[in-house]
Length: 175
Image 1 (cartoon, rainbow, N blue to C red):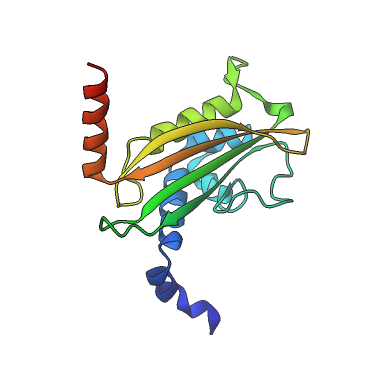
Image 2 (tube, one colour):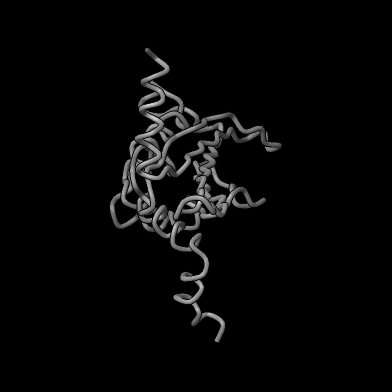
């Protein structure tokens, strides 16, 4: 029975747990779902976005196929032998079909609206249970399919104590 090892696998691979937590946060936001689907989405329909519009793996050819927006996410986890926690970096790639690039009555670019929602949900928040997410990058992704545009947002997960040290260092250097 291969599939009965879920709890065991989760114990030995923290990425499984992290993906679940991020998916749970994404699925809790109906506005984000509506931005991705380009139509109003009610709370029951939000769960249909799991593994269709919200994919817990970075770009896989054939994932992005409809005139919608997609959020793909994954993690880099490096062992940290100095502290008690691992170094975790979360990557979120947002893909949007060019036909629906505008949102909010043509007032803004859809990807910008999606990134704003993601930042509200993740930046400065303890989503994974190991520290605060700190947005470190937002950059354009070049993709071969000319029907889509894409952006990548990167969050580092910072230990609670490390976040305080970073703030103090920024404060001291700004004096």
